[in-house]
Image (cartoon, rainbow over all chains, first blue to last red; front, top):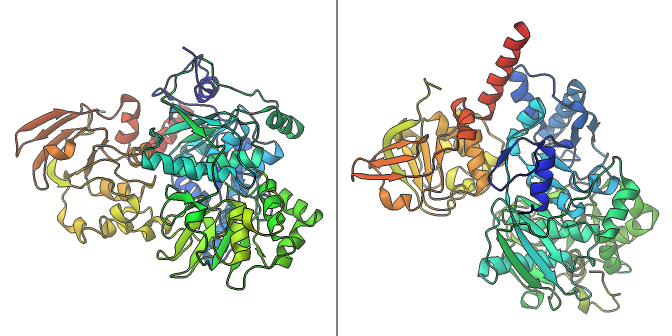
Length: 429
Length: 178
């Protein structure tokens, strides 16, 4: 019996020839990620225990993406604490304010995270690693044990395979695939339990670039997938090779690997999707909600903050102005992307359209520490989820869409299908 | 492992299906406020559904829930439950919710099929979390459920992730001293 990709990676990192779902292993990670919001808790816990030295400080990647510009005195205090912690711990890779960007984006862009790798993360959106053919596993507050000892227990998850069939139509985005998939699972159109599973994509994947693969990783995470895996294509391997900071070996599932469920989804006739307030699972064709007046829009997050997402956004905003009733926030995923936006003129397009640029990071998607909504307001965004209160006021109505849908809606002042805006070029998939 | 008791005897506190951590177990403000000190969380346990719960529960009481308990991989509520000496028996939990409970050192059993049909609030229960035995003395019902896996017993016995680390650090000191 063969192994799935996650089983192969966990076996290799745990010094075993094979593992099966349910096995408990202690993998040796390629690196350990911790974000700015939880360093304080971990440091204080370890200090109180007298643990002042980390097992593998050279492997620790400390990122600053959840509260980048310090909208409160508490955030500034946390930033100062984190800086001191990084120095005391001797952290090998400390990405302070204005360095790196979103921890689930810039490591893939920069060649730190490569196909076949495994890392521990305190944050569940580590699933983004699947975009490049790697695995990042969320371990929450137990990251303290990883920092102290170098590892922690992982129960090998089962794998669900989702085969995508067909090519997306112009103007339809990978985020739309995720929204639709979540809705199908909720409605019973597809049957699988994603809780603590790795969702492995298969099928017609060549059409998806790295940004689209990150988008494919986003929504399954919100419906409890523990990992997402997109087998790396030649283009992805070429990107990884061009940027690699380390040697790497891509991993693929064996042909006779065992899957917990095997699903098929025809995406050739998919329409742009909008998830109605309350859950990513509430996705409908955009035609059902087009015309809903909005107040607030946001483009960014680990699901939609890469260069290609912002190229799509710029294609819609170019030469246009936001509707007078809308404020639009854009958070690029990385400092590298930010510089490229400036160098290639996209930043100018965003500013002239009236958008507000946020620093690379999570933006409002982290508990609305920046750019929140008020009671009763309506928002459409590319955030990872639209649970009540995600952007602040619990009675605000939060819709989700692709970058194209959000940009078109910000121009129209109401939820709008980007394909119907006059004079638009065809959008990438 | 001799001093640690894997058995709880107490009253049942029954909950239904799909209880989220945020709102259902503790108010969301406790979660986003990153409150991890038991004394700060205890007054808010089940606050939105049963205010004052913490004043009525007693050590040994067992929370028995339906399916999908504790949605959202948060630990705040489990910290309070453990500090109050409670146990948790669920028909099912999202795996990361279960991991959070174990990581807090809470006596927890999940995948206990139809457990809510075996008891009602106020029943006298006796649960052995190491062997998986579920006894309802009030109704004279006995069931056997999946216990805490052997690989995770040490974490629970030592009081969760922090307790495990304390022991690990202590062992390192002993090794250095010897």
